[in-house]
Image (cartoon, rainbow, N blue to C red; front, side, top):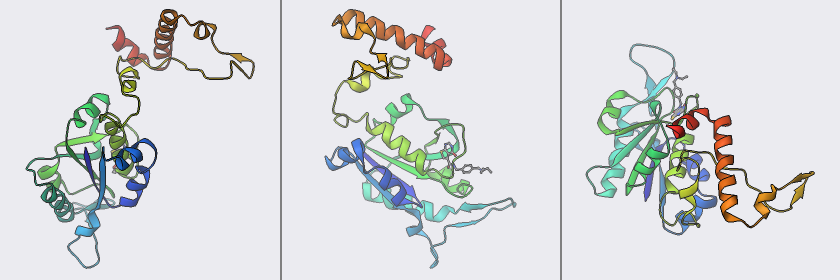
Length: 230
Ligand code: 9D3
């Protein structure tokens, strides 16, 4: 799968995605990630890509033309007609696991990061297929949200996770939070590992874990618990 990230801060995006599991998947050729600098497509010698908003109001807006030229450059190199373009914006629908699964079916995904107060609406109308937010809090730009989307989608690409079956059993696949987990030593700060986990009785361990998942979900995520019961 190939990610193309349109941004004014390509180094920020690339540095965050070159480590750990995603970095390894890129080195193994399972993923490719390119960050394309929108500033490189400015139409003036000062490389300026923002301007004041018509109608007044505080702040600057990213201009349509550099964003469009950046998009055309990416699509031109891909040699395909339609590519999904995800605009990271506080005005989008909230990103969730189901959306990550949808995006993971794509061969290419373009992610558009806004900065300043946003982007001229006219270019958004022409190129954006999905408006996505990562939650109801205010950030300074779309770069961290783009990294979140790349991370969540990448781990669904076959081969990216070492353990083939691990993504199946995690939170949100059955709608419950995970049970508590323990490793050595058996006693730490006077706390013992729950006895049942040392018993070797796999059926009992499984039902204990399921019960713990229910208790934890009801307490921490009552919204998910209600959904699970329905
Ligand atoms: C006039 C109000 N604006 C500033 C307070 C609007 C505004 C513009 C740009 C608020 C935040 C941003 C930058 N955020 C993103 O680009 C963004 C974002 C977010 O802030 N929260 C959750 N998801 C996302 S996706 C992109």
